[in-house]
Image 1 (tube, rainbow, N blue to C red):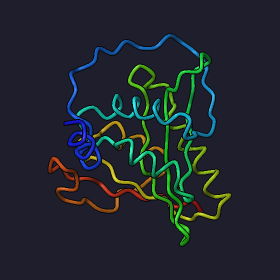
Image 2: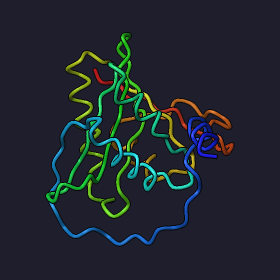
Image 3: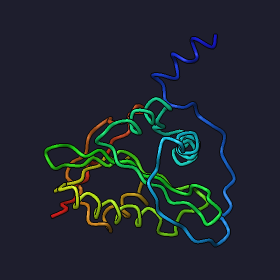
Length: 177
């Protein structure tokens, strides 16, 4: 049975989980730092909390992202050392970057963490010579859509039935030059 579960975990996103009661975290300061494979278990747990019942990455996807030479990742941690947010981006040789995933712990949302990660990414990507960054976004994720519009992204296309549950996505792009 464990063998079958391990095969299922290779191909299937994380299972649906029960609702979580979210209370805002106490006020704290945050620091931005590179995310390394040492934090893979922590980022996997946070990913499951950020994308409940959605397109969750498996531990194998994160293992790929941590080991892919084109991948860049960062985290925001609290003063107490708890991961509050993360981001992964892949940089292609043609000067385009793909924002693969970004997540903020529910209790730390509405504090500007995603915006700080996006601003930092812009600087890092420009320094690496990237000219454009793209991302896909669930049509129903209105808060994230506004975040990206405020950060200078533009809606360029709607892709039908993009996600495994049949939901459409928006393709968004931002020029870095």
